[in-house]
Length: 236
Image (cartoon, rainbow, N blue to C red; front, side, top):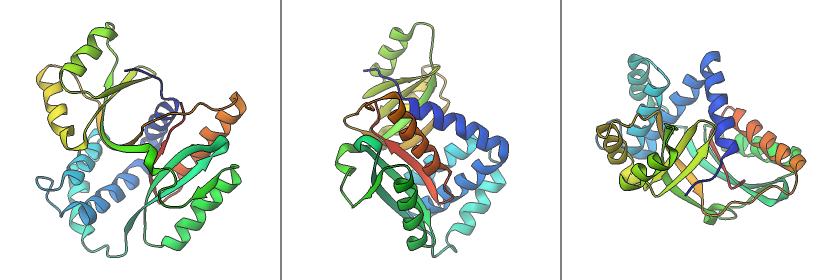
């Protein structure tokens, strides 16, 4: 049930730094806008995707009035589109990139260039998507009795659990995410954050330490691109 996710650790550390620099709110605003436009309207009660986006924003201490302002403005952003890019990092490691853009050609060219400069390549639709599945992810702090904590999470419905530095990632079906979160909180288990993700079905290790560094550098560069919302990888 357990493993280790280096990219998750790096990504969350970057989010902490982004928050300090004020960049995280901009990214979250775009996530909320896309959720309103593509997920079923401006009500979190009927729009599951928006509900998750709002929860993420609240976890990042985004002010309530900012969230409400983004939701109200979202319906006016007619040109904003959500696009998923698929590609390969050095060593053939699979990467999925979720972006939101008002200029598909510009964003596609920038994503393609990032892959190629890193020694990877942008693939076509379906080239790596078969190796990923949508999941709801809950982040929790590790407890001292890790085995007991994992058993509790499994009893409450976790389908898989991964370890990162000081944290656990617990995965459920996307539609069960809020029930799982509520059940955890009722059981007195603190939740740090929740997210809708693309989880790899199979992972692949890098062939060498140098290759792993190049893969992680590619992921960081993709994550820093203004239109990119999420980056997922099957790196072991």
